[in-house]
Length: 480
Ligand code: NAI
Image (cartoon, rainbow, N blue to C red; front, side, top):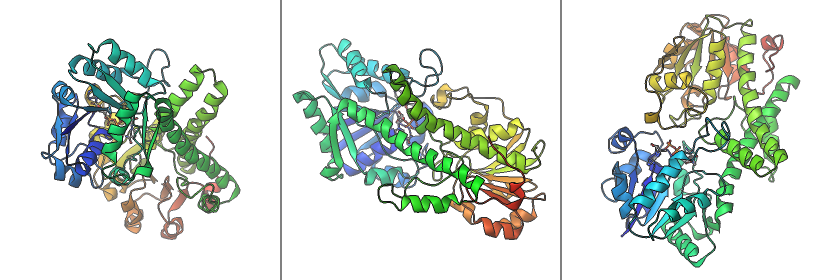
């Protein structure tokens, strides 16, 4: 029986390995992590991450050929294939701080593999890493290996949170990069055989190591670029009376462009886009390509602009101050169908409103008060270090309250900001909400999920991203 071990039981390691276990009953899969609570949660009924369909997959395989454990060394020693899916945050200090990938977790994983391995292994980069990381990992393994042979493969993960199981069941492509030597190609084939259990062969792409590593960064940069492109157009729509939904629809109908990823919003978030683009920017700078670096940097600048434009719009609409006013925030996760708040636009928007002394009341169907308080108390870039390594009791932000009920959050509020596109926000009883709010009642839709005209009929003053402005808002222009 082939044995797989995965280091890192996070948003990628957990779901990916669960699907491999489900689709490959002849393979034993063990997911290991340094975090004791995280592994305990994977072994319980309350999984540590929310992902539609994940519970069912885990239930089917756990204890059969899927295991979660803290006994890292034992499972690494026994495995034939080791996936490394640890976090690769942005460096917070030293050379490349604020841009370069922090490979501390990766390096310590590689050293540990070299220490405990007693037989030849295939080591798979599942984490998103800078181009040429495999070369560094090879050196670490080779220098510590005591004669054991390691083959490094790059197999970046393209799943999206919120649709991870669907994406893993039917990936657009699986990408495997390896050395162009007979041993390297043998390792590529071994990993290809795993995926071939359920992925059609024409969707399994094989490349050299550096192409695979760079493709992941490039794919995320292209995706984020589309969002920043449509968000840049949304600002112009507001200034001119065009409607970004109509513009995006017309643009997306061009088969060369396509309709996906063209929704204007308060800005992208998530653990990957910003981190990976910063990483790309840093690699370009290190390779003497400042123009290319600046090109991609602009994608992040527009994203920051979009968030501060939104905050300015809220403040200027409400008579240029939100001091002491209750603002309800609906949605805190970086997108719907996940409880993940890493780099969510909601953090910057809330911090902006708190800077103007607003009182914020937050409701998100999947995010706990502890997480929200931690996010709002944390410094930029600290979020992507594992929770157990973060300070556990940050001072709670006093102007912030968190509830498990949208009606409670909006009661007595002067304004509402919708910051995540949860489906349930489309069907709330907005008449009831309006009646319970201070007047004039403002509704700022950062995800364009509600029908603005219906809301105006109820009595709300409505702001939707990139849509023709409410007459009220026209007199109160807001630019970041
Ligand atoms: P995560 O933070 O949810 O999980 C990483 C896990 O690795 C943590 O539980 C941590 O305790 C563990 N860990 C750290 N060092 C370890 C070690 N030496 N041994 C064992 N476990 C260790 O991170 P996530 O979101 O799963 O991301 C992992 C990688 O995958 C990152 O490089 C990310 O960029 C990439 N990625 C993430 C995607 C996402 O949607 N979250 C999608 C595609 C790629």
